[in-house]
Image 1 (cartoon, one colour):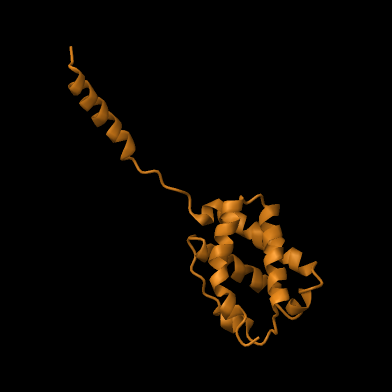
Image 2: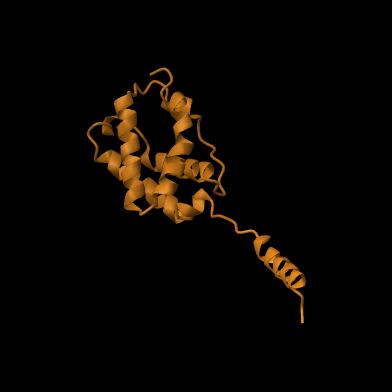
Length: 143
């Protein structure tokens, strides 16, 4: 028979093995659905923008295929995916566009709609928007 202190020690040693295993959380990229999910988010986002009279004019002379690829690569990069964004800086890409706070907010609204249409959970939506938010000053520079 074991005495009580020995039994407690054995239980603690056995349980400590359970607590040392590491559970890895999925990356934001994985939470967005990986490559296919990011592609679908970008596609929905651009459709929303095209249907939005408040901002569609900003994209009248834009190569949409190039924009879609750049956005997908950018979202992949900032969400810890296996991509490295190789496009222009946000300041360069948006210079002289004449964006307003209202147009910027419309873009965010359209991205939110795309994320919700893809059933991205609120935590992942907020995480992505949180990673995009610091770009506001570069996007709106010289506006």
